Image 1 (cartoon, one colour):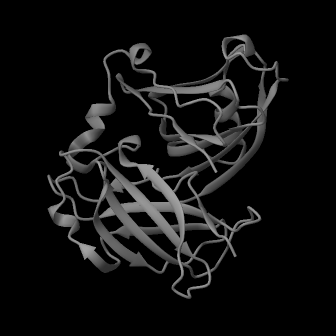
Image 2 (cartoon, rainbow, N blue to C red):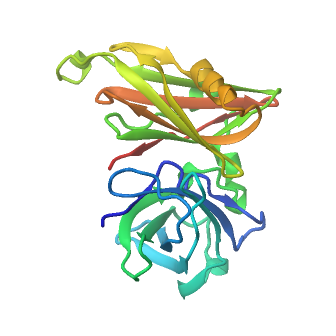
Length: 270
């Protein structure tokens, strides 16, 4: 059976559990789905986690295995650095030198055969390793908005704070077909999912419509959907899926207590 780890949140809610110069553990959360896209719930799975340094060629600097059990929402949570070591030393990785990514392989039946599920660039997360969160902040949120590519299976907003002293900017730019030399498409349904920092999963369903050739602000749509499921404050990772993503870009930014930050929206393709 082909099993995929839904990169919706896997490696997107990765944060350092220590904030020194060489942290030795990273909190990891991911949602497991089977080949039919159904959640794999309350099941022990095997996973192999690799940290890869970008280069020509890429270099695998650390590998470990884990045996987590999914919860009722298909979520697995564990600390990278506490698994069974395969190779490398996480404490000696120089996070300031180059770009790193997480590769996840999953084994639904625990028979030792892993399915490679792709990679997630660590530069896309609140990279507390070596205090790199600061590199995602800007004195001007407008100048810092950073889109993902268009025509993605889904768009990941890996970090967004919600509180009484924070505000958010999230919108979809559904550009005219003529700009891309393509066929005119209908309006696009917007489907959203989220997971918070303690592992609660929120299936927000269809939250609205992105008209073709227009810009749609989705901040209030996401907030209302989260509040309807009881989420009022905290940090979440959000997955946005569009029924017609061919010409669409997603942007995100926030202001938390006067500190403005952009969010590096990621493109996920299956």
